[in-house]
Image (cartoon, rainbow, N blue to C red; front, side, top):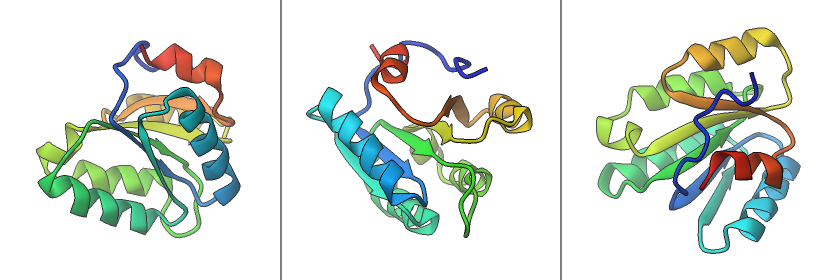
Length: 137
């Protein structure tokens, strides 16, 4: 189930991380910056701030972006974040590719992700180079 995403997507112009764990965001940012030196990486530990950023930044100037999203967060969970993004304009939705990046190994979470048309894949933490290389050209 982990490799349910479409392999070999084009590289995005930006990565967004939404995870309440600052250590995981730092780890992901370091890995992404190491491999993809010229791609912007922005992290949020508060899902609401990530949603606000997407709404404000992408309404006027959408760029092709991959969002790595945690499921279990205290204020809004990942499913709620996906729901909010799915109700944004087509211009925004068409430019954001969402991957769940979670420590959850529950089949129900993986199934829910695979059945959601706004989610491109489910990756178990931690993010690593091998997983990234299996996704992007």
